[in-house]
Image (cartoon, rainbow over all chains, first blue to last red; front, side):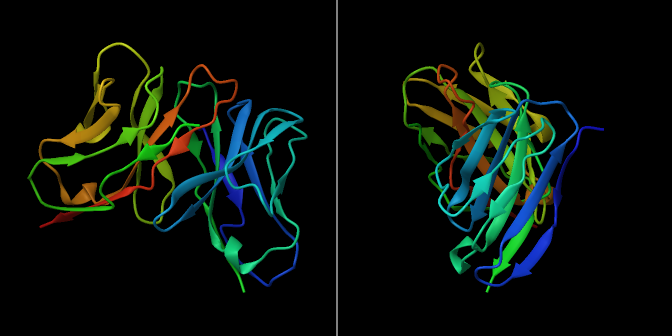
Length: 112
Length: 115
């Protein structure tokens, strides 16, 4: 079964405490991306990766890092989280430009 | 860069009535267009997409959308809604000519179906 998994699903943390949200896909897709979803703002892309070791900034990359050391995994790193990074985060993957983007179940992050 | 405007943030509609959710995009060049649905507490799933060809696209759950190049629109329609259609709907666009696969989303339209 095609799957995108994210961990953790829920996380409450404090300002400044480094955290990593993992994302893994079993579809052998080259393209992966991270979005954040905020009420009234829709989904905004944070980073994307077109292949292993190839990453690029999306629309809202400030405060985030990513890495793509292997095709199936694309972790999102918040080195010093702040309250304005409280959001719902989605990982997504796609085989090609014209096909559906598969979304993970989401990670709800609260930074106090 | 592409942008997407969803003209209505919330749309209430009675059960079995028709609905149209509006979407306009910024560029008149070649585009790929998508509609996604997000049910409460879930991720997004694809409803339908337009890549080329027929301007009327049919998707899952009885939804369809019409691509209008001159008006740069891609409105989503359903002739008769059900309670189970209550969800948030997102229009998205990508540029097939661009080097990246980047997808730009609208801000979403919350559809509430009233019994």
